[in-house]
Length: 288
Image (cartoon, rainbow, N blue to C red; front, side):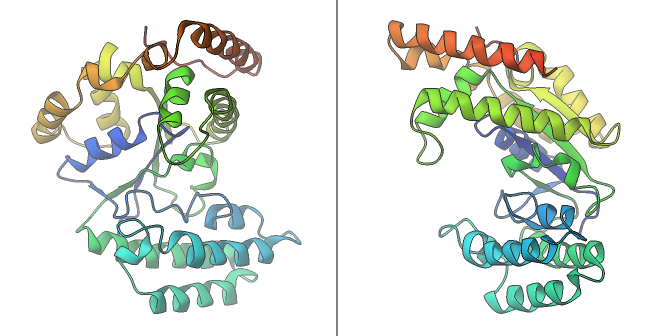
């Protein structure tokens, strides 16, 4: 299985799926099945456990990661979960080995576990090099290198008002637009902190508004260069046909709420951006 994968992440609803689909249309890359494997960078996943190795809570973190693989990420729904590529028996055998070796050689144990599972995932989708679109890849960007030293990360950012409006329409995440803005702010901070801890060249941060509207060709060039991929007519044709400026839903928050609610959203968002600027976090472009 690929040892130079691409991890795409964001705040959730910020464009990571679009980039995953885009790279899936490059002949050298395949999107994982499931498209979000979760167990590497998800909360209390393998990357979190490895970061705690050698500390008193290390083994407990590894046990929690295993528990989440079995009970959270193995079967998420019919088409989503590790069960689409492997059996429960295989996962049990692999996680047992991981726990047996974690205390003595945590990095090696983590790599063996992740590579074993991802080999099955990659075989299932016929991938030589794969891309995963777990949103948490952004806020755990600095924890991926010990597992995959040759990886690349793409972090997608988007106007927080549009992110919040999009969350409200989903069956997951906050259903209240103001809670969604607060979640966006929190994730922007975590992502910024993680990216600043990464080695130079490991992460490309891309604004959805640039990719879809303002700088389409330049953004594609950046993705290809960052992921060390040759140009692809197939990928460009798919992008031109399927990723349209209208499809970005830029400014949707204004269309989804009445004027008085929009005014409050704008105020709350302005305060949010002010706090982010004070922390040195770049603010995504407005879709308006």
